Length: 91
Image 1 (cartoon, one colour):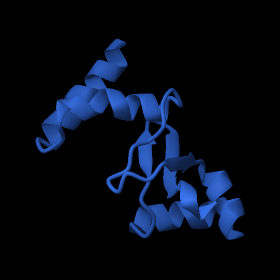
Image 2: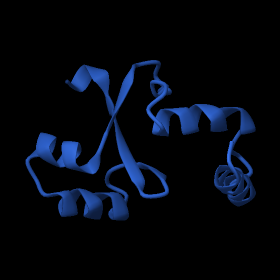
Image 3: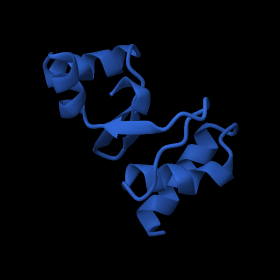
Image 4: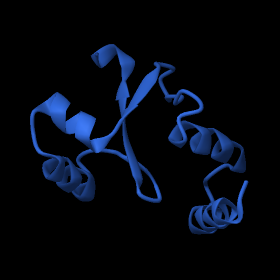
């Protein structure tokens, strides 16, 4: 884990004490594309980019960004990387 990642992890833990330190390596692996995202329901989840999500819903990337900002769409952010979890059964 590099210094920037350690800093991000410590900031996350300080900001939200309910985050379990055990889930951080999994979350980082998912964002880096090294592992599949777990889901609370046990269903496999696919992480889509904003562009892929916009194409799927036939709208613009800016619309997807607005939905994320308004909280209508849940997104996972790591630096400049933004991924939107979508259950595999929706494909």
